[in-house]
Image 1 (cartoon, helix red, strand yellow):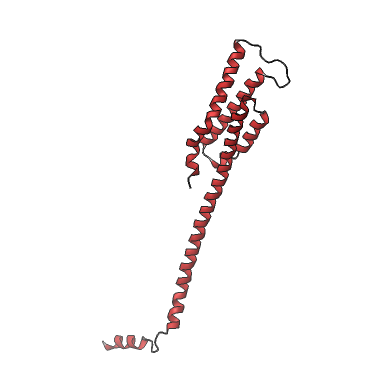
Image 2 (cartoon, rainbow, N blue to C red):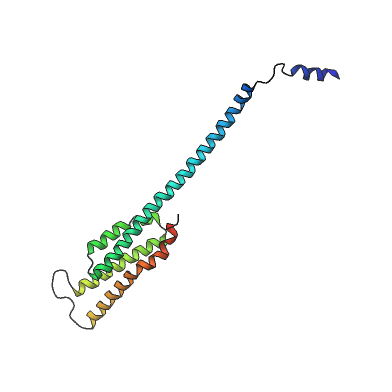
Amino acid sequence: MLEPLKVVIENIPVEAFSPIEFISSLLTPIIAVITILIAYRQYKNDKMRLKHELYEKRIQVYNHFIDYICEIQREGSCISIDSIHRYHNNIFISSFLFDAKIQKYLEVIYQKSISMWNYHVQCYPLNGTPGIPVGPERSRICKEETDLYIWISNQRDESVKLFKEYFSI
């Protein structure tokens, strides 16, 4: 019966556990914990950087949109086809930054701008020739042009509701 106890006692180390050995045994887990903390901070920083870059791209598209609406408010239906196409080129990236609802909204603005420009050109051709003669057809076209102008001009305030969720930080 004493034999097992003797084996246990003989296996106990004679020399004491030194503080240097103790610290060196803790060093590897401490380094692992510090490495995990650093990796986590890098992850959080990268996530914030991505969110910031996405915000910057979105605000750029929104600013192009607002500039375009202001140009229509300033120029009226006399806006140039080049301005309309420039707007369309500037918002092209929106399909990568916004959901389908915003993309469709920006595309509707573009389509209505083209329609407004077409109505204007029918009444006032670019080559200087007389447009549609005065009468019910010209009145109808002018009313359509005016309605589109008013609708597009009002979109500056309406757009805030749509875009608001994308600009919270």
